[in-house]
Image (tube, rainbow, N blue to C red; front, side):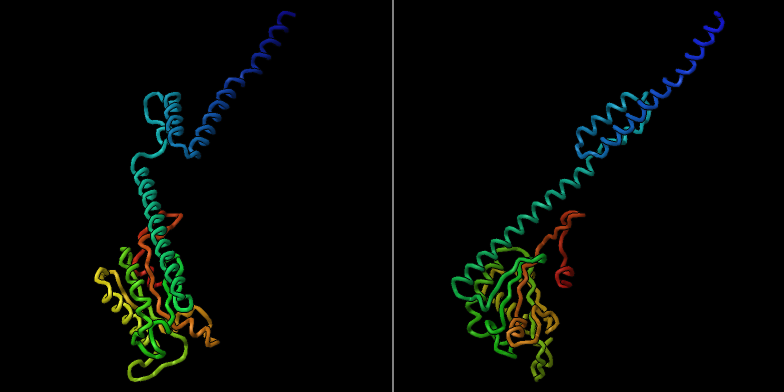
Length: 264
C-alpha cells in the first residue's frame, strides 16, 4: 500500500511540471504585446520610458531589441518641426490672400464693378478675373479709358505682396484673322502683355521679376461658347497671385514651382 501511494504522489507532481514553462511563456507574450502596443502609440515620452524599462528588465548589458523600440532621435524631430513651420507659413499666406480678396471685393462693390471684375481664392492662389469690355474693345489689344478704374487698385494690391503674378489672356471661339492678329492666340497673348506692362508702368513699386504673361486663346473657357453671354464670360484677362506654398497632407508643405502654376 505504501508503494502505491508514493507512485500516485509522483504522478501528480509530474503532471504539474508544465505550469512553470507555461507561465514563463505567458509572461514573455505579455511583454511582447505590451511592447507592440507601446510602439503603436504616438506619445514619444511614454514610449521611450517603456523601452527603457524593458531594456532594464530583459537585457543583461548587451544590445537589445528594445533599444530600437523608442522614437528616433533628432532628425525625425527636425522634420516634424519643419513641417509645422511650413503649415504655419501656408496658413499665414492664405490669410494674406484672403485679406487682399476682401479689399478688392469691397472696392468692386463700392464702385459697382460686379459685372466687370470678380475674385476667387483657388488652390493655385488668388484669381482676379476682368472681363474684356472693362479693358479692351472687341478684337483689339488697346486699353480703353475704363481700365483706369481697375488698373491702379489691382497694381496697388499686387505691390503689397511678394508672390509671383501670372497674367493670362483668354478669348471665345469666334475666329479672328487680320493683319495684327492672325488668330486668338496672338490676340490673347498681346492683351496679357499689354495689361502687364500697364500695371508695371503705373506702380513703380512692382518688381518685374515677379510677373509673367501668357495667352491661352479660346482653349481655357470658363463657360460654354454657345450663347453671347457665355462668350462674353470667356473673353477675359486673369491675374493670378500665385501661392508660394502648396499644402500636401501626405508630405507636408512644399514650394510651388512655376511649372505647377502654368500647367494648371
